Amino acid sequence: MKLKRKIKAGALQFVLFIGSVIAILLISFALISHIQNLFRKKTDLLVDVIKASEEGIVQNLISSPPLNRESMVDISAELDIQLKLKRNFWGVFEKWDSEASFKNSAFRKMALVGSGFQDISALYLKDAQRPLIMAGNAMISGNAYLPEKGIKAGNIYGNSFHQSQLVFGQIQRSKTSLPELGVELKTQLTSLSSPNFEPMGEELLYRPGLEYKKSFKEDTRIIKGQQLFLEDLKLSGNIVVWAAEKITVDQSALLQDVILIAPEIEIRNWVNGHFQAIASRKISVGKNCDLQYPSALIVMDQRQMIPQHKADTEPAIYMGSFSELRGVVAVFSDKDLWPYAAALKLDEHARVSGEVFCSYNTEHKGLVNGHLSTAGFVALENGRIYNNHLYNGRINSSYLPISYGGLLLEDRLSQKKIVKWLY
Image (tube, rainbow, N blue to C red; front, top):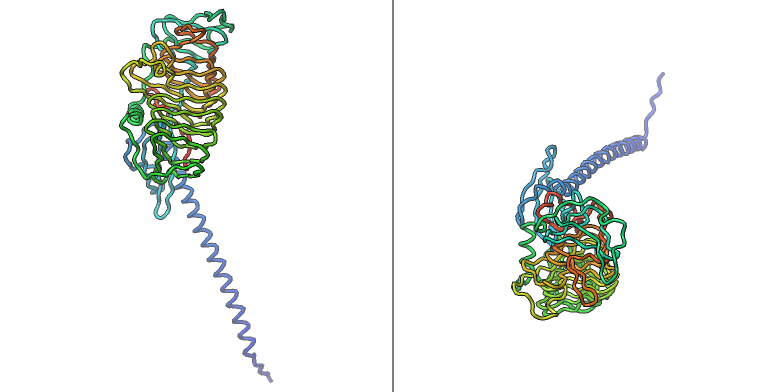
C-alpha cells in the first residue's frame, strides 16, 4: 500500500526562489559578459580613433593640407573613421589640428610642426666673394658650406687661431644667396611684423599677478597695450601678447607657449620659460636666461632706409652672456640695415641649441649646438671692425637632437616634424 506524502507549499516556494536566484545570476553573468564585450569593443574603437587623430598629422606632414582650410582625409581602409585636418600658423611654427570620429566617438589632437634636417651641417655661409677668417677659440664641428675663396686662419689683436684644423668636417661650396624661407612662413612673418598688424580676438585684461591658461582647442585670447611690462604673472597656452611699441618681460613672469608681438621686445636677466617673440625692430635677451624648446626669437625688419642714428644700428637680436635658448633665433630683412655692424649678436657664453639664421652679419662669440646660416660674420674688437671673422664663436652640429623641428625653409619643407603636441 503506497503512502501519499504532501509537499509543503513553503518548500515549493523555496525551490522556486532558488531557481529564480540561479536564473538571475546566470542572466547577470551573461549580461556582464555582454557589457564587457561591448566595453572592450568600444574601448578598442576609441583607441583606434585616438590613434587615427595622431596618425592623421604624422602621415600627412609631407603632403600638407591647404593652409587655413578644413579638409577631409582618408586614414583607415578597415574602419570608416572620418578625419578632418586643418593647418595654420602659431608664430613661426605650423599648427595642425586633427579630429577623428566614428559614429559617436571622436577625438582631437593638435601639434606644432617645424622642419628638421635630412643631413645637418654646422654652417652655411653665403658666398660674398671673400674668405672666412677664423680667430681665437673659434671652432666649426660638422660639415660647412663655405664661399669659393674658402677659409683660413687669422688673428684679432694678437689672438691667433688656436685649433688644430679649420673645420672638423667636410667643406662644400655655398651659393651667393641664403636658403629661402617657405612662402607661407614668409607671408606669415611679413604680416605679423607689419606696422598695421593688430591681432583680433577676445581680449584678456592684463594685471600684475595674473594667472591664466588657455587651451589651443579654444579661441585665442589677446592681451593688448601701448607698452607692456610683464611681471609677476603666469600665462600658458593659446594667448597672444601684443604691444604697439614695446614688451618687457621681467624674471617674475612665467610664459609658456604664448606669442609676444611688438616692434621691440626686451627679455630681462634670469627669465625662464618657453615662448615665441616676434619683433619688427629688435629683441634683446639679458644674462642667465633659460628659454626652453620650442622657443623662438624672430625679427623681420621691413624698413627700406639705412638708419642714421647709432641706436638704430644696434643688433636686431642680442643674446647676453650665459643665456640659453632651445629653438630658433632668426633675423630677416630685404635690405642691409647694418652695413658696418652686426644684425645678430651672441655674446660670450650665450648658447643656442637649435638653429640661427641671419640675413646679414652675425657677431658670434657664444656656442651654437646645431646649425647657423648667415650672410657674413663680423667681429667688433677694440674699436675696429673685422669683416667675415669668426672670433671665439663655436658651432657644433652633432649635439642637435634628431627630433628637432625648426624653421620652415623652402628646401626643408619635405622634412617636417612634430615640434610639440598641444593641449
